[in-house]
Length: 104
Image (cartoon, rainbow, N blue to C red; front, side):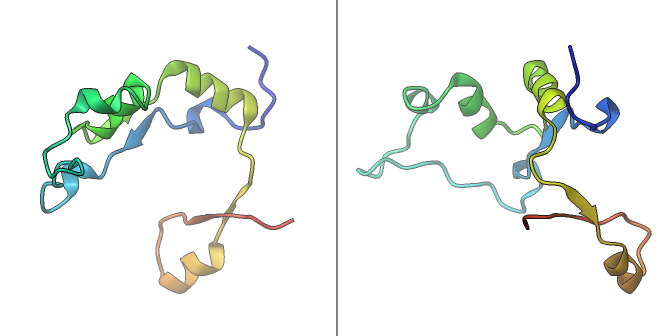
């Protein structure tokens, strides 16, 4: 595969973070207009099975499909991430803080 981006493969995320397991309370189920609980299978009519699986997952980290990781490598990031060094200094943190530049 030819890489078009300058993104290094080791910096491409391999999983998405799912906040659901870390919430203090369980999220209430999806409800239908009549007040009954929507079943997972009902969503598969509207969305892909993979998307529905992720939406209902209780896993803290959800593995990104390999095809998508390869796509990230080919395409790169559409808007650059810039490091907020002055903010890091102001906060007195050793953490690296980045922001997404949306300008022209």
